[in-house]
Image 1 (cartoon, helix red, strand yellow):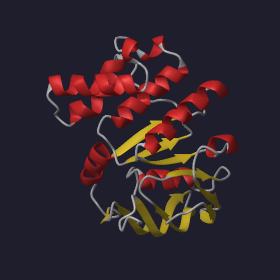
Image 2 (spheres, rainbow, N blue to C red; image 1 turned 90 degrees about the vertical axis):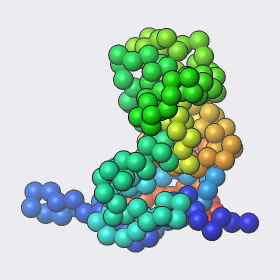
Image 3 (tube, helix red, strand yellow; image 1 turned 135 degrees about the vertical axis):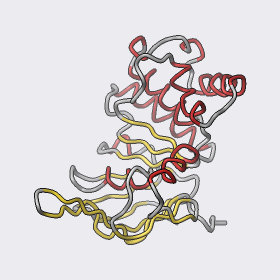
Length: 232
């Protein structure tokens, strides 16, 4: 049975940026439905709008026109504080550059979202240990990012993204700074998380990375060129 409220739904979304006295259309009437528990790859050439779309889905930006429904709630016109609260409680982010805090340990990096949510220390510590085990880093909790390989840093980033038990994981070129073997390991981890029921939406320009997904949204010039897979 299909879920009546998809994880994310964009309807006629436009995003226009003023630039040098002109308007740049980053998104031009994009509509797509991201069903719960699906794994999406958003693809397209540079300037196609794929990163802009990911930012909108992650509530890091808002559309100029159109609607974005997150789990059935229209978040298109929420305030910055309301969007921040949604990001903290419902979304997880994985970046190409990892975005770890250099002076914090692995444990402290994973714990950060829980700290901002006000978790009490014992509960927070238990959650960090659970997540570190899930990504294979239990023996690295006292290390700092500079002491880890690129693959290990991305695993920390994934554990941090999972800390708040998000309904959607958003990944922007998650293997872009990794060698092919390590990249494949990270993708297998994302596939496993998807099999556990999480919705994963990933931007990538590489076909062999997109092959790990079961849906593709191909973009060109700010529009959806085509959708491959079941988007229901």
